[in-house]
Amino acid sequence: MSGSRLPRLVGLLSLLLAACALPFVLSNFRLFQFSQVYIYAIAILGLNMLTGYNGQFSLGHGAFYAIGAYVSAIMMDRWNIAYGWTLPVAGVLCLVVGFLFGLPALRLEGLYLALATFSLALAVPQILKYFEHWTGGSQGIVLSKPNAPFGLKLNPDQWLYFVTFAVLVLLFWLGANLLKGRIGRAIVAIRDNHIAAEAMGINTALYKSLVFGVSAAYTGVAGALSASVIAYVAPDSFNVFLSVTLLIGSVIGGLASISGAVFGALFIQFVPNWAQDISKAAPWAIFGVFLIGFMYLMPFGIAGGIRLLWIRATRSRVPQEGRSAVPTQAHTTT
Image 1 (spheres, rainbow, N blue to C red):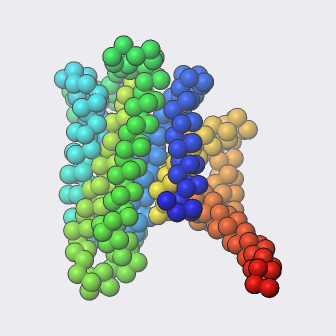
Image 2: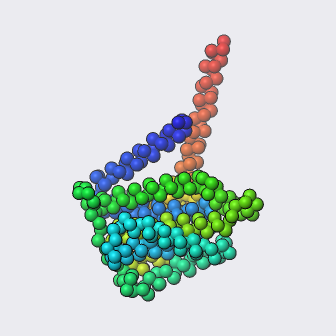
Image 3: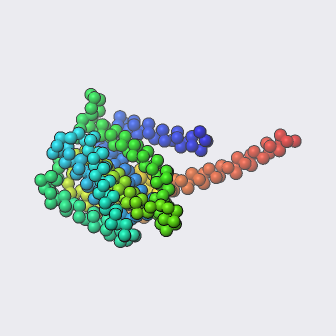
């Protein structure tokens, strides 16, 4: 193992161990908040695949979040299906819907695509209210949080924390392998120059629709997890502001960055609460100040800022090590 990868591996293992220890030191409310962070991180990673890696701008991923949440809630409430089985169903359904939506969206780019996805975010909550027999209408669906299986001594919030964390790790691992492989190189090539990508033999239409579907699948799984964690779904919870919030998290965390999804999720989960504590009269003004400050100090996102600091720190050590090695070498030769 190379020396450059060893610190990253040690740091990653330390973070995983610290995350596994949180349920035994934090209150149930804090566990609920961190479960929401993991859920947002999954959704932001899905959006980042589309926007950061492939260059397709979306303002409608709150719709896929809503579809995933309602698929899970209906399956649990109407058909008494265990929550674990609802996650892959929500993911596959959103994959199909996203892929089909991506086909006509191939003719749109930039702001036109943003408006098309924006209309999707506007339409889905109203459609959910229409099918009142299945969705509960404006009242939504009230669920019960599942208990830990196998007699584990964990309360529902602790158990759901571990479930969301496990799904997060699995999807991040799958996403990292996808983006670092042949498919990932193809979608990045399309983002950088789609004409050159076509000249290289890349089927741009297929890949753009595919990444739209995969992005929607990630967001749908996040929505399905939120249905169990919050134990309630309602159409008004998935308005346009949710789509904008996910986009904010993607940009703040760092576009075209896997780890940036976690930083963005932490931002959209905790910064609004801090803004509320600072000023109850104008919390969104304080949130806007935080947003401007982060974008000014870290124009490439939090992950990009950390990467630049790491590069500068490692480069500053290399010349010092080189200068200290020269006298030793000269002494030995003499």
